Image 1 (cartoon, rainbow, N blue to C red):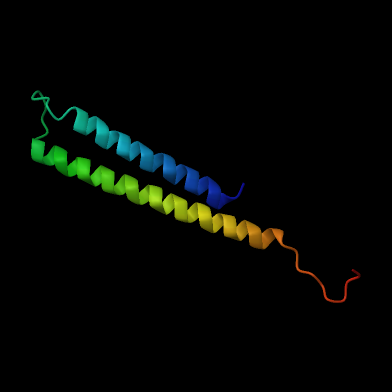
Image 2: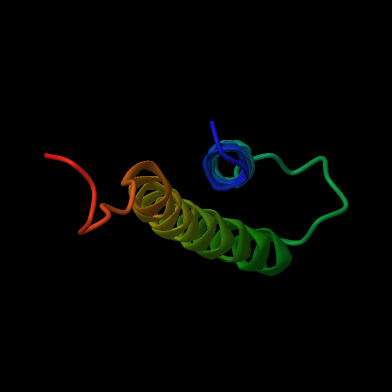
Length: 84
């Protein structure tokens, strides 16, 4: 497994965690016993959702690029003068 694939898995996990945090904030939006105002809560929900989706998309891009790099490394160059 290459460094790019490991990085993409980690980015995907972090993106999913940010979306989970946004869900937890959204779930507790009716609580009145908090120091966070509703406007700030909705701003952070939006921020976490946008960042989580962006990280998930970036993780897919990194994963695809690492797959292409692996294909390039695996294909040996054929020598024209080699026996066939």
